[in-house]
Length: 388
Image (tube, rainbow, N blue to C red):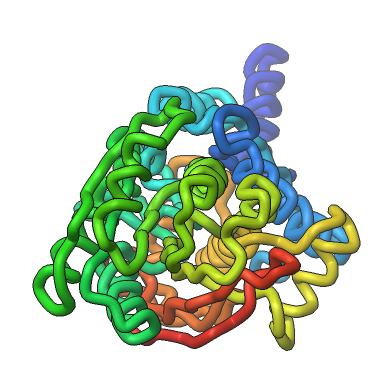
């Protein structure tokens, strides 16, 4: 019989316990970050994203958690405010990665934050999925970056085609936000498409992020002979611009982009957007199936109809959860992050509430755009779908 001295025996027991602990280590929760603007110029964007996240978390945790290879694991969501600023989005990304140690990040929302923050996520090898960021640079040459929305090189041409057919127009005026990558890029794309196929851009004016008075730009528009105004800007600026345009006597159509899609659009514009159109990701009015079910659940819980941001965030969260179910979790954070990224890249199709998606190698979904019209009640009414 071999006898071990007391010190050696204690050491072996401790080593065995430590080894067994490593072998049995499994995540207690699935921790996912949300890099969103809860304050700043467009707090409704962050609110919508957080509310959608809370619905996802409630749906999953109410049945015991996410089923990952036969094991139920609860969701834990960490919401960090990026103030709708690029530098704050970078700081939020670093916090979620290094301090909160999330498996993946939903957001930022909006290309102006997703482009700089996406570089941080990609370099740290942490999967990011941007629900509402349409600029191509968000995912380009970034294998850890994905999105749940269509791209601006698709949105601009379909918007121009619709405007030409709907308004019978030749001359367009464009006003955009010079300090926002999303707005600037979409304005340039629309301008190029319009001049190549449909007519002339008779006014091409910009403004700054903090501007409140647009009388100089709008006076040029009113006096230009433009048949309609194209506004690829955020809903808070749309509210100011359209109401001021109405005061200056503008009665012609206004065409917008997916950044219009907020519950605050109509009240901020004082009803000036009634009858206007914009390209977007889904139409709440007339929705059916699980899209309708989400809308009703959101409206009952929060008191208003969910906007594009909410719907896309809901889809983005479930895309990440599908990837986690597909790859499983080991408890090793670095390995699991890479595995989730690889699983996201392998998703061939996803049936979301904003439509069916197929992903290309860049991490971008191929999906329809929707044209909606703003009703006199401020609802977004479906007009037509436009295919890639």
